[in-house]
Length: 248
Ligand code: PGA
Image (cartoon, rainbow, N blue to C red; front, side):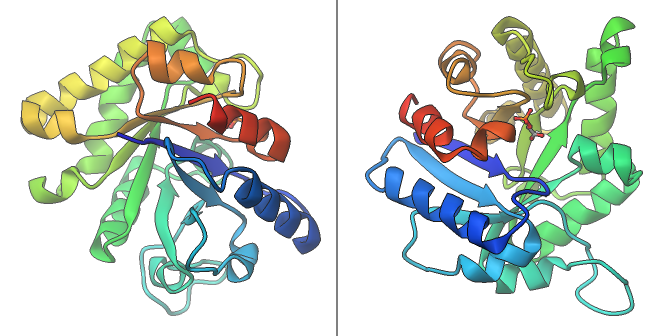
């Protein structure tokens, strides 16, 4: 099975010229890549420039609003993203939770909105540094997961992708150890198995995110058993990103 590599460009780069160059270089550098499924989540405004249906790179949104249209100043709907050929949408990224006060109930509505339009939600979960120091990793993951999945039909659960992203590892250059990430991955599977069924839990794809680069990507996929990675900073440098994908 192919590994899923999602590049989260966040609020970068600052011009369309740079964004196009980054996208085209990745496309060119990885055109013969067979082992990975590639998704790029650029800032919304760049999506119209990346509409080539034949591209090997799939598109994703970094966020969305769950209503289709209307008086929601500053928001972008799932439907708009679908019309711009997005297939994946990141939901509940820690930067959304932290800087924009997104709570579990809003995240739950967004997941339902994404599923309702038949797109794939990538639910980001992870403990903060303080949670980790207090020994609350599993309690936090359980709470975030259960709240995000509340009221979602069993047949839809398997369409959701999870991304374990410890907040303290994001953008810090200090990735989680593969052992610790593996424990979190197994724990998430256990919760899914208890809540739904073992066979359903087995089907769910779990990614790791948080300071992934070419020096550690193999640890998460080969050692810790993740089916892919969510990459922030390292996806902004095309040489580094191409190297990372080629290592899988
Ligand atoms: P990072 O970001 O790779 O820069 O740590 C990952 C993410 O926020 O998804």
